[in-house]
Image 1 (tube, rainbow, N blue to C red):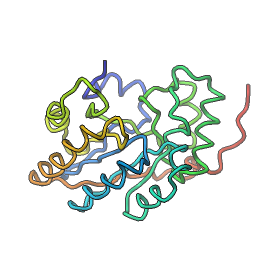
Image 2: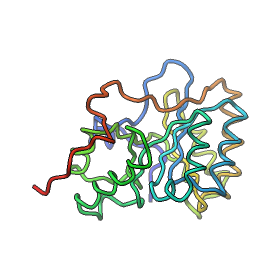
Image 3: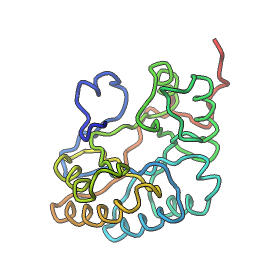
Image 4: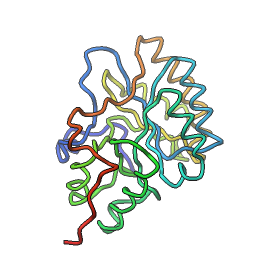
Amino acid sequence: MYLVRTPRIIQSLFPRFTWRLPENDKVIHLTFDDGPIPEVTPWVLEQLERYDARATFFCVGHNVEKHPDIYQQVVEAGHLTGNHTYNHLDGWTTDNMTYLRNVRKAARMVNSNLFRPPYGRILPSQAHFLQRHYQVVMWDVLSGDFDPDLSPASCLANVLDNVRPGSIVVMHDSLKSFETLKFVLPRLLAELDAQGYRFEVVPQAVEAEELVPQGMPALQTA
């Protein structure tokens, strides 16, 4: 089970996370998790280019290591990237030391001060450390494109019925989501463009002195 729209009470549990951006203008922040994937990510880039749309890609370090050319395509197209751990770890079921080392390993390949925990699952102790070095980006609209029991039309409706100015929308440039994404993304871009929305990257926090992924100190066991 998952929630399409993140309730405010959940957002309040982690107030320093970025859930949505305050926007007076009609701006949407599309995000894509789990790539880069050669069969999927270049197609996503083509769709975004048609609308001069900029998005934020939360990349799995192992995928970047395997497909550095695709990662470079994302960067050169003007999109932003973020750290999504090296092995797509679930923070709820991973001990802190293993989890944080995995994030640091991904940081060697993904040069970004943005971080999103896979599945949105992160322990308070993990968050406490990561917030000192990253802007943790969550979402307020989850498309559900990963759900095999959700029809593509319902996935599209999940987004269109819930977005508002400043929304951060989660989709996936993964093989698992690709069939649904092929239906949803072109229609989503066309409909929101017709409504006057612009598509921009998630802005990075200005507190740069606290967000230094490449300079993370050695992890301590106590």
